[in-house]
Image 1: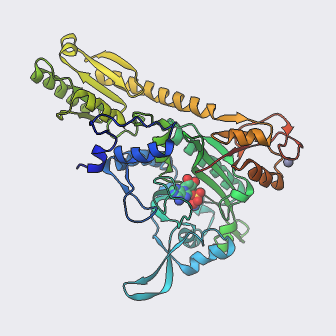
Image 2: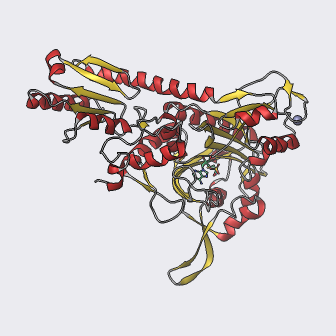
Image 3: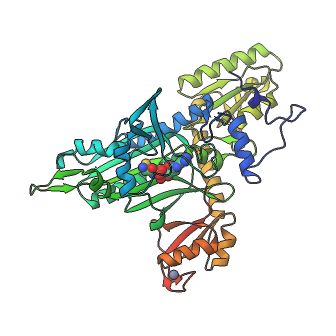
Length: 487
Ligand SMILES: Nc1ncnc2c1ncn2[C@@H]1O[C@H](COS(=O)(=O)NC(=O)[C@@H](N)CS)[C@@H](O)[C@H]1O
Ligand SMILES: [Zn+2]
């Protein structure tokens, strides 16, 4: 399948390569162009905030979400709830929790027949799932209950929409919902969720921040929200995962109780935690460079591409390449042999742009010496013997993983700085994250956001700090908040 616009896009008139776009120079243009030329997302669908997955992008997503399933399946059960939520159930949330009534889409008729009861398209599924939890939970024995689903959800976003980042149809919304007998057990589950998300982003070689959101920015109906944020190439942050302690708020609204030992009905405690395709936006943005995508081995649809250098005895070169293809396939590696009639240089450009972790070049001289030229996407070039090549490539893949993480970590660390004053925080959040002393009083928090003109990501988790003066009121505090501009 060819996508005419993507093939020609990215090349100048001469068919050469376009002026190299760099994520650090002009992130937004680089990002939008790469989604097209990298055949990830086609943003030309005629509904605002709704996009099409190209097959290559979809293959990346399948591998990425395969990791999420691997991390959740040992102690969660995957399931599926309906897309549409009856108004009476949805409005319970709107009355009690005032979360999503401004973001929800409604279905009001079937064909030409008006519906008795309007149906909401799930913006997230608490109001679809929790009436069923009321039926499912009877006693202690039914808990802990841990389910998740990976579905599309719909939010009438009024801010600027952006592919993968701010959508009106979120196509790959992984939402987990858990039920516990006590508040403490639910709190433990929030920690488990953050640990699984941390493992997930580490396997994508993506560094991240973990913060407790300020009370005014938690999930509607939650006791607290812990969020995972990634620093994007332009220094703004992207919220790529959230875990919410819901206490018994939804249990009250949906009357979810269990019979305790003493025979009385007790309200349950709940959590929910979600990741969307923003994780793909982070993967593309954090590792991408002026050559295009750079994909970690574990999620790359094509892990190794073989480019024959057709000089001298062409048939011999092709025969050796086909042999290599078979050996690597048998070793379980996702490998392609590019026998198209483009010049090798154009092939190098194409496969680098698509983020292929390792390229093999095989020419007559390599064959003479029984070796292969190996080019890792982070530009490491080496020569390896054909003997034992598959194992050697897996080792190179591990080195690439470490190199990608180190490159990303160095960038992220360069964009975080501890500051003491509001002016320093303003300067730092122009294109980065400021770590600001904050006494945790709400009015100081609101003043901080107003005067710094950036968002509070909240209190860094798993870190402690020495006393410093709150940047607003001067009170000594060992508390800090991250601040940044957010997508
Ligand atoms: N419009 C959107 N487009 C893409 N991703 C989004 C959008 N809105 C939220 N997300 C992502 O989805 C994650 C979960 O959304 S949420 O509102 O924070 N949490 C919930 O909906 C809870 N029910 C947990 S599943 C967010 O952390 C964010 O990464
Ligand atoms: Zn203060």
